[in-house]
Image (tube, rainbow, N blue to C red; front, side, top):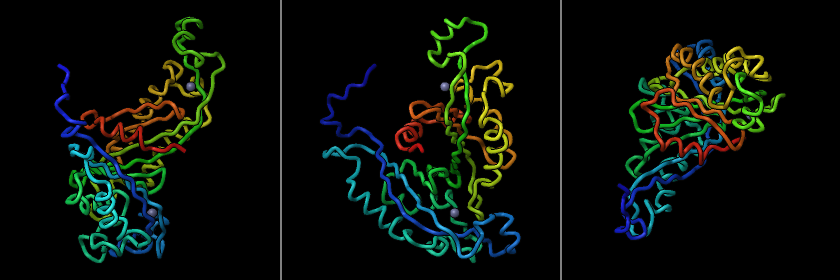
Length: 308
Ligand SMILES: [Zn+2]
Ligand SMILES: [Zn+2]
């Protein structure tokens, strides 16, 4: 039965999720005082260098609730004030390691200010002021973390890209039939795309290193197993799997998720999602952990991720 909203005056009382974006620039350093310089370098590479380095962070705050008589979930000027008061004010142009007591590494309970640790602590700072549904924090356009208020659990996404050619056609049917199904994509000599690949992993944030998993290891897995293999190839001819499977955006995303699943488990995280953007107009998403898929996240993706 369809819902009847005719009793609601201009949507009052109905639910909605709103988002607000805020930016700040901060520096940080990954350094565990209980380890030697060599050990810190082995763990964190250049991120261990003194006195640190900086990022232009972008924070996306999602909040949910019922519309008030003025047609708003919240008054945006209150939202702006809370974010400035609790987050951008204290963090902008500061050294994160020294700003909040949670990042004091001389304390045994101190945690390094990684993207995933930072987004969780921002949640704790905002949660009494705002009806949060999710937070996303971009450290750069190619690295971001999502937090949904679930204890130490967070999502971390790495974006990379590769270029490849393909042709969409099935061997067992005629050229005319292929053209009917796949259109121009069935033309016999193929065509190419600049693919953008987002790999999202889920896991618990380590209480000391602030990391879901070792980031260079994750980047190496994606680079060695996917980018190096697929970049500058003709997928149908160069990749064994696509000799018998049509390399649609969906099939390529599935292929990537099947390859990455176990290696990511081996570094202590769970592959949560693959998003493959084939062109500015089309993309495919595979939710590897089905129980965690939710439409809210999908909407956030589609509306807010800016493509290079
Ligand atoms: Zn950094
Ligand atoms: Zn194509």
